[in-house]
Image 1 (cartoon, helix red, strand yellow):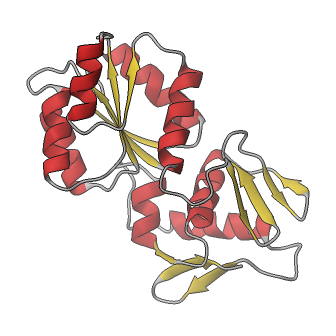
Image 2 (cartoon, helix red, strand yellow):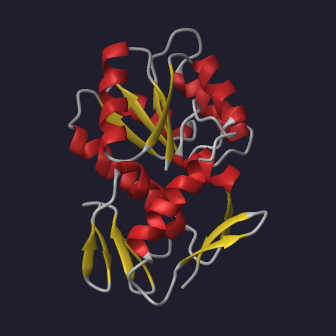
Length: 222
């Protein structure tokens, strides 16, 4: 899943970015409101973490503009302001949740998971397709009860497939949600990682789950 982090304090941004990447999220960082608007216009995000106090345009105006553009990406507000009035202003501007600094990273992750689950029928952290399952909390992957070890990027790719089970996903869709803005779309990296996944997920099983749709992309089919 790809996250846009909007935070002008470099140390905080680095800390959050590093932690999110360790949790298999692709992360882009914007240091001000104008850059956040621009990046959201050119990239699709699964979630936005938005600080309220920013140089130039503050987070409240950024959030309101995104909502005025009919962008329904979940937005989690981060701020040092903790009084009720500020929380109300943040939520009224269109934010989905609010976290006051300082916060524990575990709580941030829990709120992110909750927001990403909001529009899913299955509200648990377990996602299943046929005899394959992943746990978004522990990042454990099992097929037919056998645990499978994946790298961080392999897990992120499999999670995206699982969230779109029985749907065709193009290479562009994969690059936009599993990799960050530095990804070179002209390489064969996606195909390489799909092959890695096949070797780990499908090679020992008669029923193959990951299929190539020639000229289009891939599908994880039950």
